[in-house]
Each structure stands twice: as structure tokens, then as C-alpha cells.
Image (cartoon, rainbow, N blue to C red; front, side):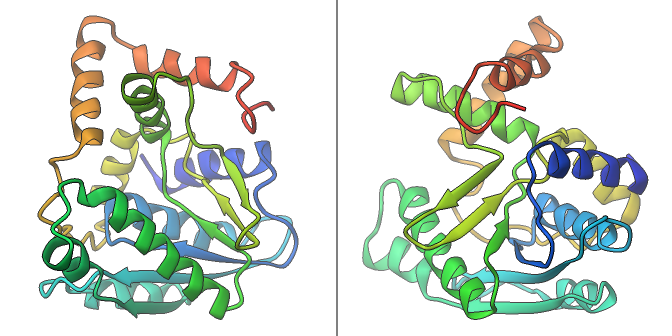
Length: 238
């Protein structure tokens, strides 16, 4: 996938769900993974020709693992003219050493989001962009069906009234395979997650399950995404 295609799909999601208003200051949550770097690249490029002006900053929540090298991401942000904030935390120690959580992802995600929200508010941002793509939308729906017994997934735009923050997800029209191709084509500086739970989660199980289903019924993920968009779920109607 080339850069213009990334711009096109990102802009369509932004326009369809009215994600950006004039003079928004948007924080992009940067994990170091392929999705968040693609999102940063796309939003930076769109600034040049999007019809309403907006500002960006990038924020990484450092969980406290010792082997996280963010030097190339700092260089990328500098080349894109985006201010970059790294928030140091001891979340890893709390989750894996102090609490010894059997299900570490839930607590880690809650603490990480809290640190990100505090950092973006301090930087003057009222919106935060998450890098969830179309596969994430479908996987979250499947997780909800399997583990909660309900048809549900996250919204393209979510207002969090407790924190007065709006979450936007501009990559919802992009497939994970498209993002992988884009990252390789443009040599983005992906940083491998140092988390010991990476690749051993319920989401990874559902991802593999959907991959198997798709082998028997090609196109199933596309049809599931269409079903979500047409389902009447709050926040998804165009």
C-alpha cells in the first residue's frame, strides 16, 4: 500500500465520522508498533492538505521495561515536525512484580490509558488518536461475543465525559495487512514490544481463530466489518 492510499482511507474515516474539528490539538498514542507509526505518518501528511487546520503531538507511555529503544522514533517525529513526549512510568513493575497479575493486560491497559490521558491533557490536547484498524474492530466484536455474550465493539469516536477527552480511530478502514505492507515499503522504525505477555493474549487467540475461519470462508472479516457498520451499534451509523 502506498502513501496516497493510506491518506485516502484515513481521510475517509475522519470525514465519515467527523473526527477532526478546526484547530483541534490531537495526541497520537505511540506504542512503537506498526499501527501507531502508520497513524502518525498519515495524520502528519494529512495536515498539509486537510481542509481544516489541526495540531499534533506524539506521546509514548514508557511502561518501565529496560530494553525499550525509542531513538529512531524520536528521529521520525523530528523529521515529521511533531513534538514527542515520553512518559516514564513503573507500570511494568507494578503489574508483573508487585501485583503478579494472572491477567496483566487489563490492569496494564487501564494504567497506560490513565498515564496517556494525563500526559495529553498536560500538553493541551483535547483529542487522542488510537491506531485501531479494521481487524481490531472485528476482533473486539468477536471477543465480546465469545467472552461477554454480547454484540459490541469500540466506536470510531468516543467522548469520555469523566476526563473530557475524545478518542478518535482514523485507521478503521485499513486492514492490518495493508499496514504491514506500508510499514515495510516506507521502512518505518517499528519497535518490538518488550512485554512478556505480547502474543499470548485472548486477542491473539481470537486473531488466529478469525484467520482459520477466513481460510474456510474467504472475505469473512470484510463481511463482519460491514455487519458492524450496518448493525445500528451506537456511534457506527453514517
